[in-house]
Amino acid sequence: MYHFLSVIPLFAWPYNVFMVVPVFAAGLIWGYMRARSDAVAGGIVSHILADGGIMAVYLLFLT
Image (cartoon, rainbow, N blue to C red; front, side, top):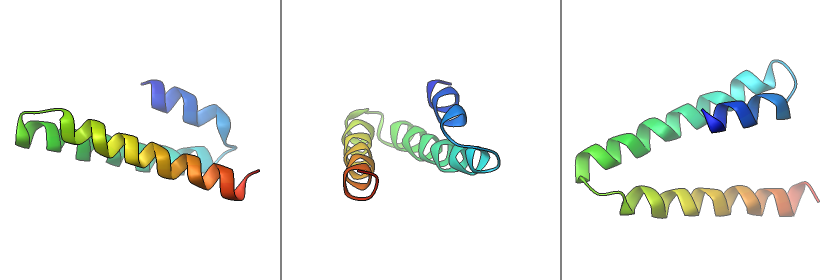
């Protein structure tokens, strides 16, 4: 819920709806990884890498 509530006010309609879709898809992927491997390490590492990629885009293109 945090991701949904933080993404929606950041973008104007209809972009906020389109930004929720990849967040939901990532959650499904990480949930599948957790269920498949019975460990959270893979989800944590891939979430860190995803956050690093997002921050790199912010730094390169939005500053």
